[in-house]
Length: 408
Image (cartoon, rainbow, N blue to C red; front, side, top):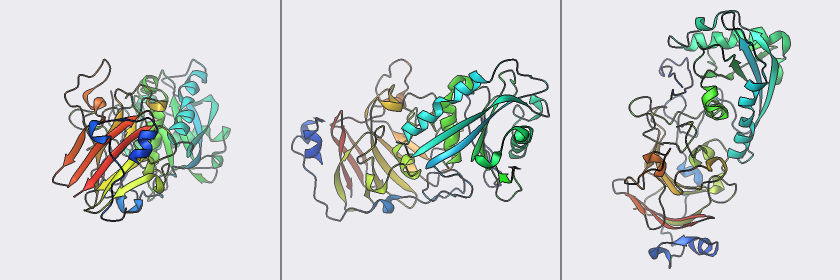
């Protein structure tokens, strides 16, 4: 697959192309391990920390796992985002078909985003159902030669200028630009994020700050490309690897990793970062000497405690969440407790999130990979002695999982 990435004019960040209580639980029908049968919520030598104590600061100046997302550079991740879709063709690649099939590729993204965010983020998609002729040939925009921020912005500017006679851009927050399938030179789907230090792209008195320009990969991954690239406009990084094995860090556990993954629901950490998960749905252990027993409800469903966070440093933490094969994850390869390490100082594409594989010796079924089998099940324990972390999975079932967390 070709990876997808946002483009930036920030000098320090080069553009990346191609495309990141036990008792109650048992009463609810959870399956327990032998050691969990007598488990009760443990006492805490220290009071539970507020969720804010487990939030991490961004350190890369770009898309990262920090909670202090730059809301000048990135758009709000809650509420309704008004999107205008433009269909473009070129002098060297004229469209010969209707726009309906192209709009159909994007349409499921609205329901997918609403479901994934539990209604906190909505895409209001409007399509300009006509072909807009671009002023230059498709192969002149640099997609095949290494797209830069400047050439990408020119592509966005040309599309908006050509569509301006037919649309009022003051009504929209962002644009999607979809080329005719005949334009093979437009090969992949980068995100457009404005540079506040430049004049940018304007129309109808409005600066168009955010957009996604789709390419041939839209026909491979469909609306999940929309979810991935729109995630960049919210400030989410790429979770696949820019070097080495592409999906070594998170496998298919988040649409910001493997777009074609079997469990593409946004990680619980991402849901919290984006404001879809509330602080009161986060169990936080931020200091040594703390321990808690927590019942986690699946991240695919609304309500309940979504993540347990054990902060280990200025920019690092471990996260535990419950995953089930339902909703956006209906084809998940494994189910149970997903444990991963977050580092908000690690840049996009270099592994800011790394899944801990609870079953490294498992033989994945057809279509699944080793990391896709990573979920922990009752009776399993994860420890990081250097960080003083221990996570015991005590129980699991239809309603979620019970974990015991310790920071020593």
